[in-house]
Structure formats: structure tokens, C-alpha cells
Image (cartoon, rainbow over all chains, first blue to last red):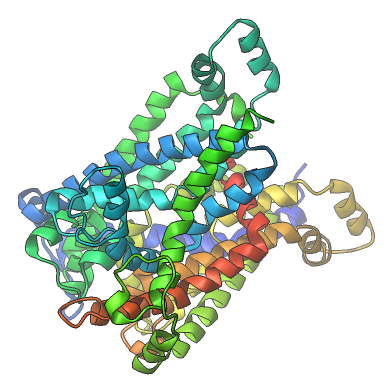
Length: 298
Length: 273
């Protein structure tokens, strides 16, 4: 039995979110859909343009470059992040009493403001005298020009992004501790090797969490902006080749909207990104039905 | 015990690798221009002159103040509004509640880049597009992840305390204010520190909205420092590093005092789906 008074109180409490949803999410999305069919530069009122903006995107070489760069980065960054986080979480799980200390050390980089992180890694990744190549040198590798060679800029950004893997590792560690110990005992009694235990006990036990990070990190990665913008755009001049190699989709969207004041075109770019992300997310959800065991849902 | 040795050794090596960039940053900020790139672990001589120089060159203190003001406003706004909304979802039954909460969860998956342009146009329309207001005022409406997180906390509270309060004549607001809020304090702290960090480290919104250097937050100011001192023949990277340390240290301190809240927030994310 739902009383009217209770219902009224409930609605009053959730009212701020409803208002925010209309003002800052649903309303803006519809407005941006409308704008995507117009030319709008803030000075004159929007002029209806039909499908022109969308047609332009199809022919726009920079939009294609930006989309390619973004997909390339995502395909490298997301799996690398997941595999490294899993490895670190497995180590932390077996570290006993020192796990707390190492958890702090691994988590701390995620607190660094991305601008500071990017400024720092411009130097660490420097091809001539950067520390990254110095470390590679100890092992006999001669490192590439991470910040100037267009072929190595995106791999460099991926490498840099791994410094902040700690929060994902902490999330996996929490999932690992929820896998029942009896299953490992049963597997050991069956004579399963460590590797088989990982495949048949650990991975199924945490697949829900891994899948969750896959979806969320993919969405975030397709919107990558701050580090690459800090390093290669703004008042900082980069060579055209560097600028092309680091041009990610949201950077291009930002430039079109707030640099060129092409609000209509930027809105069309935004809707294309929205559709790309929606399709990828739906595909991931479909695939997950076959591979994800939901027993570790908390 | 013996089996732990290789694990701890591996973690020690990885830990050093993860700590090294921090060490490098602080060390470089204390070196003079000719030694910034020398990769030496310890600066010799160690000198705070870079901090003094960057302090003179740019309004660093104003940026710290702006970041603190925006960060606190953003964090308090997000915490209070999300708590109110979360309590509504957790405590009261009303028609459409579950569908509406599904919508809250769905918006978490929504790419923020999609509303970047139209939300800017809204602030432009009300004449606030070049102020700091857009950096925090959106948080007054509750934020999906925090609503989700605090709802979990409120659902964990025993129903009897609310029933008892109702019998004593406490209305919905007093139940929220005097019972739910104090009991959910750990959850409130999680939201507060998460949003403080998010606002303190954000670059894209300050880039969009702030034009006057006096209004810059630290990341926006740091980007300006990098653009000015981090290029060309006269690059002064030691100043960029000093400003980077100033932007980073408050977050490191925040983490050291509030580590368990950050970890708790990260771990709670998982139940998001």
C-alpha cells in the first residue's frame, strides 16, 4: 500500500535529480540533436542545414583521423589496462601483510591531476634523455621517440595511461577476495596447475567485474582528451604530424566547437560519437551473455 | 611464508617503478635549468628557487584558491544533493520509482562529451559561460554514481530506526536530517572526497569556461604554464615541474588522509551495472 503522503515525500526528495536530468541531460541532448541539423556560430541564430553536417563528417579527413586514432588507442589501452590490473591484483592477493602498503603505492598515481601527469610524462617519455628510454637502455633496448614520432605517440600515451592502473587493480583485488577458497581447494585436489586454476576458477569468479571494467573503460577511453590535449594541443605548437597522431575524437569535437565555433558541426560529431559508443556497448552486452558468469555480482 | 618472497619481491620492483615518476617530478622541481633532464635521483644542489620563480611569474596562489573554492563547492553540492535524492529512492515507495532509478543508472553510461556543447550553450544563454559557476553548479542536481552509492548506504540502515522516528512524529525531512545523514557519514565522505578530486583534477570544463587567467583553476593554470615555459629554446621545464608539484601535492595529502574512503568508493563502483 503506497500512501499519498509517502509518495509525495519520495517525489520531493528525487526532484533535484529529475530537474537536473531535464536541464543537464535530456534537454541538452535533444537541443544538440536539433543543432546537428543546423549551422550555428553563436553570433547569428542557427540556420537549418538538413543533413549537411553529417554528410561533411563522412568526407572530413580529420574526423576520420580522429576516429581512427581513438579506436586505435582504445584497442591498445583497454586490454592492456585489464591484463596489467589483473596481474597486479593477483600479486596483491598473495602479498600477505604488505598488501596494504603496495596498494597505497599503486593507487597513488591515480590521484595525480592529468595535466600534471601529462607534463611530467612529456619529459619521462622524451626520446633523447627521458627516463623511460634510459630504463629501456639498461635492458639493451633503444627506445623510440615517444613524443615526436607519429608512429609512437599513441603507444606512448597507452604506456603512460598504465601508470594509473591502480584503481582498476584495487577493484579486481576486491573481486578476487570474494572467490570462495573451497573452489581453489577442489581444483588443487583435482591436480589443476596454477594456470588452470586461473582459467577455471579465478577468471570465471571475477568475470562480472572484468566485464564491467571493459564496458566502463571502453566508454571512457573513446572519450580520451586531457592527457593528449595537454601534451600536443593548445598554445603548445606541435608539428602537423604530431598533431595528427594525437588528434582524438573529443579533441577534434572540442576544437570544432570552441575553437572554430562550429556548434552545429560539433553537435553532429557528438551524436556520431554517441551512436558509436552505443553500438559498441550493445555489442559488448550481447557478447557478455556467453562469457560472463554473474555469480560475483555484489 | 617462504612462498611469499617472490611475490613481495615482484611487488617491490613494481612499486619502485610506480613511485619513480613521483620522485622524478619532485626531484626535477628542485633542480636548476641545466640539470632538469639529468635523471639524477637527488637534486644537487636542492633549491626551492623554481617555486619562488613560478610564484612570481603566474598567479599561483589565486589558482590554488580557485581550485579550492570550486572543489569545495562542487563536492558539497554533489554530496548534499545526491544524499537527498538517494534517500528518496531508498526510503519511500512511489509509483515509477524503480523505472526512474533505472534511468539514473542508465545516465551513468552516457558519454559526457555528448552534452558538452549544449550545456555550454545553456550557460551562455544565462550569461554565466565565462564564470566559475558551471564548474560546480551542475552538481546541485545530484549525480548518478553518487546517488547509486548513497542509496546503497541508506538501504543498509535498519528500517526500525525510521519507523520509531515516525512514531515519534518525525517527518520525512527530519528522518533524513537527524537519522539517515549521521548514520551514512562514511558514504558522505566517500562522495565528498571523490568529487573533490574530480573537480580539482578536471581540465576540460575550465578550458571551455574560463577565459580570465585570474579565474583559472590549477589544472587550467598548469596548462598555461606548460604552454608558456615548456617549449622552444628557452624552455624552463623546472618551472613546469614546480607548478605540477603544487597541483599534485594536495591530492596526495587528500589520499593519505582519506585512503579507505577512496578504496571504498572504487570497490562500490562494481555493483553499478
